[in-house]
Length: 385
View 1 (tube, rainbow, N blue to C red):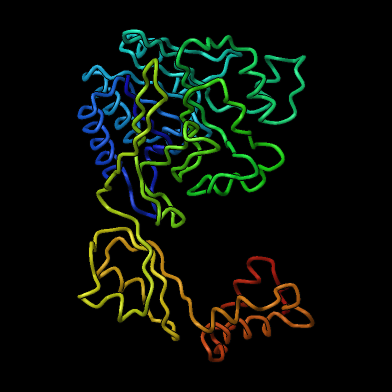
View 2: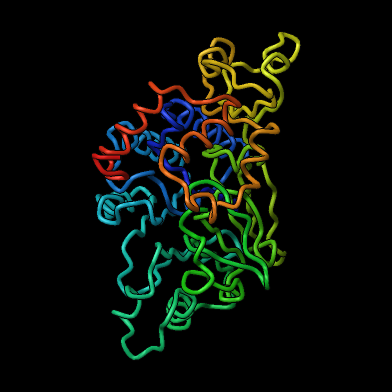
């Protein structure tokens, strides 16, 4: 049997001020084409289906469109909730969906639910583990020694009767690490996982009973510990940290007498996200401009700040997201000892120094008065200052 592994769809997400619904529909249509071409039996969706716990109407309509088209083609769906999803909202209508072989597990109820499939001599159990916290699991296993996420997931698995004579697949949405190695972070998840070393991290050996583990939560596609424990990654690039990622969808082939086969099929977005670097003149030179509708992060190496750089850039690259600088002034600022920068300095001195570092000239009295007014409003300085 053949499965596609998806995760972190984040339907309804915006990139800066740009609505991505059209881009998301484009990539989901591409995935539908792949599913048909490869005669997929099922699609594994490993959480963060929506970007927000209260999804927009456009996001829910897009998920409905995707699921309906999979059902029409007779392709089964195994979907779990992620940390971005509302468990209750994603679970709505799940009993009705199941009659069309769309299986949803979004609320952990103390049991690791599974669906059993068979093809010839091959029997496959697909287990679905929605995103769980240690406290949730402790509620159902009060006698277990559960102090972190790893303890919690091991407790769930150890209390599940897994048949070793079947092929076993798990769909999960957690932060899973290899031996002495954390997964490469990307996208919005990198913010929430800076402190995972103590609490949230789960060892990949926790899943030794499974032939394949379809993971969601990390946006960069990668294996963890072994090829069969894998993050599909998000189907689109959702941050600068993902600009160099090659987005793919894993195609999983399961048979009774062979090791699971994994093929990574490339995905091509409607609008790519790219990071370009150089002087303004170099980057906007006609011979260097390509795919102008792409989402652009630009790093300018001009020594002088360019007035209205964003406005100029968007005349050529209308979907420019962000512009920053890498020049001698910025490198000097990065080397400043922030802990000592305010020693024995007044507010005007600090502002004047900062202005001089950035613009290589002195701040005017009018500009300084504006800064004083803002600082008073924010409570940084007193009225008399």
